[in-house]
Image (cartoon, rainbow, N blue to C red):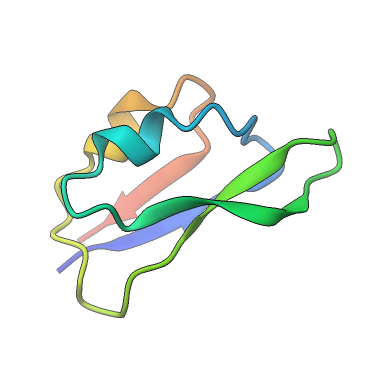
Length: 68
């Protein structure tokens, strides 16, 4: 199982990671980061992520880390 860590200060809310996640475990949050963007947040339960890291590979700002 994987663990998704999102650095909300690097996230620009482009939503590329949300389309890359095959389980649809990421969504745009409702809180702004310091740059004024809505940051993406993990919305799955613990153990639901497979750890494929497609979301991290898709992120242009390197805001996502996936740990197995």
